[in-house]
Image (tube, rainbow, N blue to C red; front, side, top):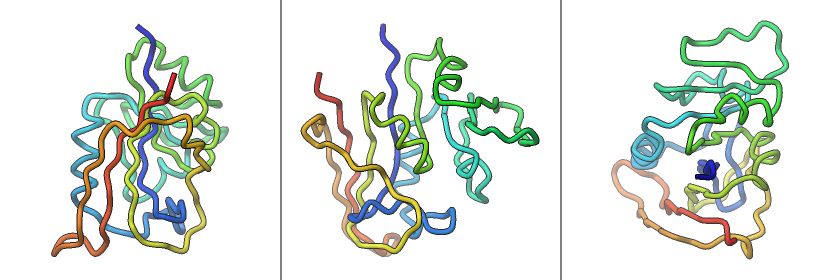
Length: 165
C-alpha cells in the first residue's frame, strides 16, 4: 500500500497560518479535531514549528527538518535535513502528517494525497502563509462548519480534501 502524505493546517481566508510564529486565533474545536485526526500518527515539521511555545508534537514519532547542528530534540523526535530525508525516516509508516510551517508546506504540497485544512472565516495579518492551492487538483471529501460561539470568536470550516488522481 502506498504511503499517504497528509498536510494538516488552519488558515485564514487570506491564507495566513501564522504571525510571529503563533496562530492569530484560538479555536478549541479545531485543536480537538487535530488531536483526533492525528492520534498515533507521525509528524513532520520545520524547526520553527517545533520550537514554538505551543508546538504540536506526536506522542509517537516526530521528524524535525532543520540544518541546525545544535537542535535540542525530545525523546520521540529525530532530525532530518530535507523533506526527502524526513520521508525516508518514516518510510514504513502508512500515513504521515505534515504540520508546516510555511516553507515545509511549500515544499510538500505537490507530494500530498490529503489535506486537512481548517478555514478560519476572517482575514488576518500574518507573516506565514499556506501555499497557493490549485483547487482543480483537489476534491472536497468532508466539510464541518462551525459558527462563532462562546468558545470561538471566529466561524470556521474543517475541510478534508483528497487529491484527484
